[in-house]
Length: 169
Image 1 (cartoon, rainbow, N blue to C red):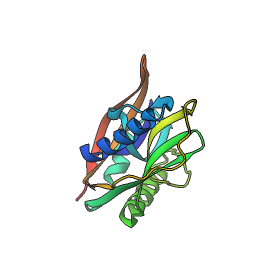
Image 2 (cartoon, rainbow, N blue to C red):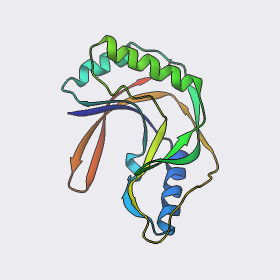
Image 3 (cartoon, rainbow, N blue to C red):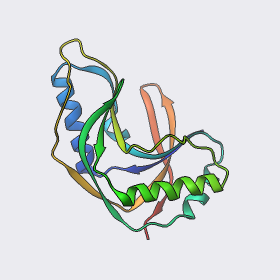
């Protein structure tokens, strides 16, 4: 099964990311838009792994206090557009703890540098015009839990299912 650990977004952040998608569509940009229900902030991508209970056990070994994150920018990595977050030491510390817990448990994960973002569009087609920059009004939320998610390919795209979560203390 394909697994990842994420922060599920609150309604204000989902609405903000969706509003950015609407703006792209108004500019005639086509591509693979992330469905609203799939918008999330990935903390660690595990990939194919058959032990979700082991992952949940590792998650239970980390502790974190509730903290606030703020979505405040739009950007791209080549063929992928995202909404991003202001720098946040608590978020960075949580990711370090999480990745250390996974490594200590022998659970493989993608070790790329953490760049907090929410994917909103893949493979954009700019036939009607190109967007080079966009500003957004910031939206925030308090992070009170992190979730172990399963990703499965459905007939109409990816389906994300929460397998379990760990709450802040």
